[in-house]
Image (cartoon, rainbow, N blue to C red; front, side, top):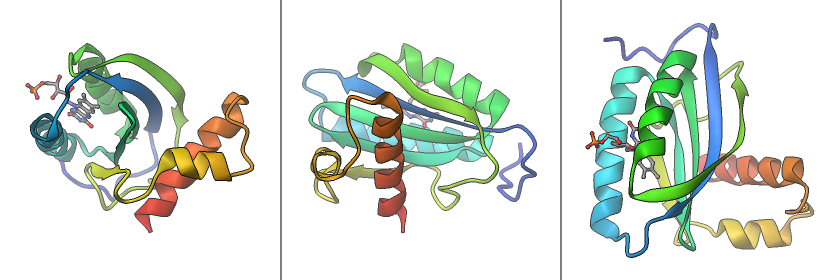
Length: 142
Ligand SMILES: Cc1cc2nc3c(=O)[nH]c(=O)nc-3n(C[C@H](O)[C@H](O)[C@H](O)COP(=O)(O)O)c2cc1C
């Protein structure tokens, strides 16, 4: 299996979703999620980030389109979260998180809720809400 991120842009896709963490999800659960995510993402050439705050997950995944579909199908079935809503998906010209098989952040790094509240982006307008989240995740990655 290839682990080469110097991939061509052919078939590079992304998905951004939000989900609700299962009640009582703890640090151990998060560690377990990240361990399996990083292992499988490494095998599939998937990179991205996961932000956890106020009982919500926000995840950006990018990689070969067919691998994104495969991993998203598993993630959708995962009982550690529910109410998964895809905020945006599509083709991607180049990776935004190429250094992370799954970067993790939470309120301790920076608060997404505060960021959205302070930004000009309307959280009612879906496009602006999504762009605000992506800008937040990318700003964290610098
Ligand atoms: C919020 C969340 C994010 C996840 N992200 C990934 C991911 O990026 N890649 C991945 O392979 N698995 C991810 N997972 C875990 C898979 O859903 C899970 O590993 C899969 O269902 C298979 O279970 P296993 O870990 O027992 O093999 C995530 C799970 C949750 C709850």
